[in-house]
Image 1 (cartoon, helix red, strand yellow):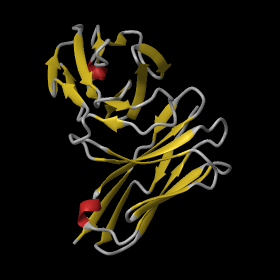
Image 2 (cartoon, chains in turn blue, red):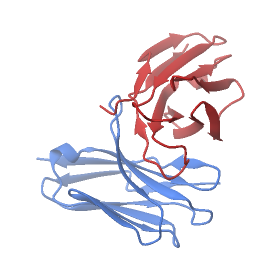
Image 3 (spheres, each protein chain N blue to C red):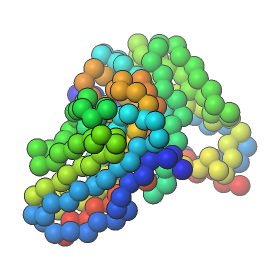
Image 4 (cartoon, rainbow over the protein chains, first blue to last red):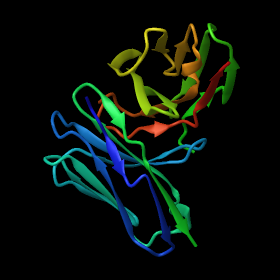
Length: 110
Length: 115
């Protein structure tokens, strides 16, 4: 069973703070990990697709790392801004399924 | 705006009925994916089509079916609807057919309410 977990469930930070959250997934039969910035009723934004152990990707103030051997990925946001407030979803693929985590709801207070 | 469109935005129907949800992918994208998001289950992958053919299958019930047409739009058909089918149904598209490696761009979703 492909069980994807994200922590924390929610996070409240002040504008300017840097923050990070975690996505955990089974390391066996791993194919790829996706991070999405998600807002219900609006289109989501695909942030990163990572496949290789040790991958690090960056997009502006947001970056992510991947450890496929231990089954986790970190998403980092440097200098959070109110417009970063959203739910951040990760999705892990194995050889025959894809599962999303429940998301981390980030609120950045001005 | 991701460029993926879904219609209708909202759908209210009764148990036992059949509905069709429609998705138009981004221009140039050949793959369409369907997802169900319910309150207690989170986002669940249902099925993927690539250039008209089924490519990958997830947690899709037998009462549900999908197809992708020559113009690449896709329809998700839900039949014999039950109360538990009430959810947001999202579609996403990507350029290529590789199930795992391509970024997916999500539409705004169709909210289905079964009464």
